[in-house]
Length: 172
Image (cartoon, rainbow, N blue to C red; front, side, top):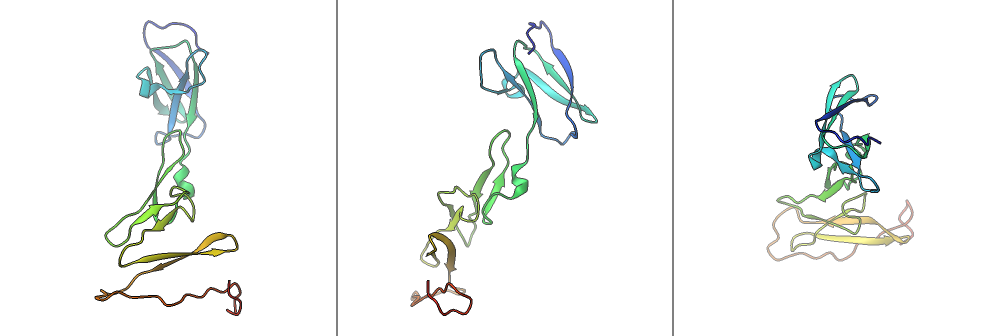
């Protein structure tokens, strides 16, 4: 805890092992009696600048607080989102998964909000349909059905049969 009141900027040299100028390192301030971390750069009360070889300069114009230096993990590197979603890493927070919409397909988030294999689903429209099946208590199977060519008078699916074994003898 730094408790002196500074009349001018105070610079502290810190070492964060294995970091480079491209690392996502941030400094956070905890005011006396507070449990809320405040990013010093967002507050405008200081800055963190890479020097070299893992060394950083923490410049502060406001002390009387506890300070934490942390490197933010890139959670998107682990691919947490649905294959039809983009991942946006957020500093100090969980990543944001956004389901993809393009000219031919519109994926919308499920209750999983874009995360994992069930995070997005294809939105139904007049030319494409989505069917999910209850397979042993989970909707792990997803059918996406859409025509390859223009259909002037529409089309119908008469039947889709699922089997729970490899030889297609037992319906599920």
